Length: 90
Image (cartoon, rainbow, N blue to C red; front, side, top):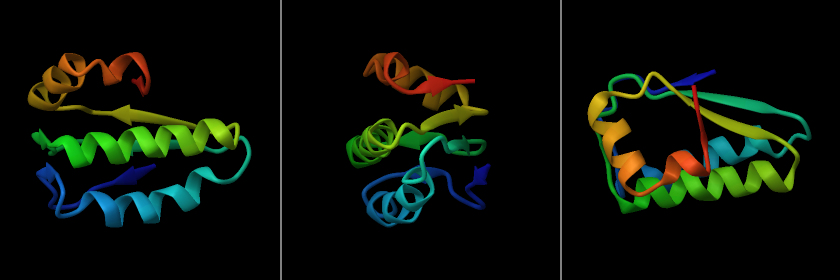
């Protein structure tokens, strides 16, 4: 499980760096990456793009990504852009 300490916004400022660090974890066949999204209240388009790329990398490597502990704000936006139909939310 990966948790984001003191991170409230998953945005263009942090998205690319986080993607690079997290992709390593899903490049192993069969890996399951649980992202603890607790505390994140804002996700911008760069954050969504990073999550989608992470999901694609996982699928290509027969791995998976799950989003856990979404705030109400993040859940609402994820559903609005229909990312919940692509990435597993637990």
